[in-house]
Length: 357
Image (tube, rainbow, N blue to C red; front, side, top):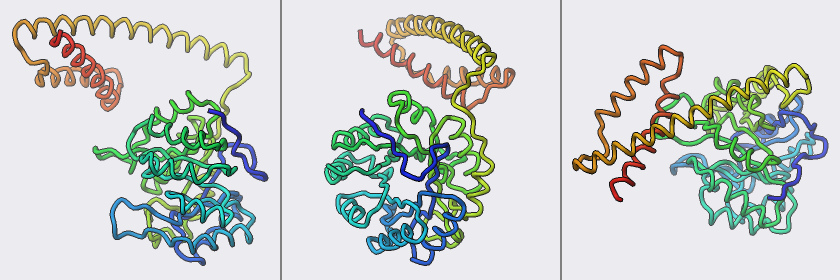
């Protein structure tokens, strides 16, 4: 995928690149007041939702095209760049007509290849930065597919926004980060701009700081954070928005670490530790190979004796022992369950193959 820098003139080339503004443009006064305060605090790119695709009907679904005039006024009065979400070709045409500087594709739209293709077709021949949020569910190839559709339409200033993934199981955050997915995108496309959306991951303003710090520690390039002049009365996502003053405090507390270091002592020490990790990984692979061979043998005995593959009682005993051992060694139960679930599923798959031979 051929990519070009998204860095806009006048925006400093340092981490984090910050995009901030309200979840939704509600009134001209709310937009202008928020933008004025954000500009005074050094924010260069303003965001506001004009069209809001909601999960259920009945909620505030955006002010619509009238709000684009407010974004034009923000540009004129503050000098900030302006950005908003698009979900249809009509949205694209209206934004281009209004001179919007940056577009993003929302999570629900990314999940629909037909909608993404419609947006890509509408942007053919246009040189504009486009950011793509991850789909609602953790589908890496669907996310990459959206990027590829835009790239094939001739767009090269493309980046991603990581806003977390919906999960059936209740968690601390509104959307589970699953950091390994954006990390995999960075592995495949090293030049891809990576923006984190701590507002949507956290779902609550009190978690925005910690999520933002983790994103910085993982090497993300920027943050897109929802900021409202009075979050308590916001018409959408009130709990996850912060005031411009709070945003400045959040950004001020961030520790921005270097991606690498030329320090010789650091390089020698890190290389030695990584060599140890490589050796341990090799040991893990050998142990997994041995375990799978034993699973194959168990599968053969089950087949000979007409026994079902799945033995729920056995799985419960394995987890129980693992948790006890993990507690002794300081390993987290959630982590252990994920690892052993993957191993257990692989064992089931191999025994299924044995059964069908």
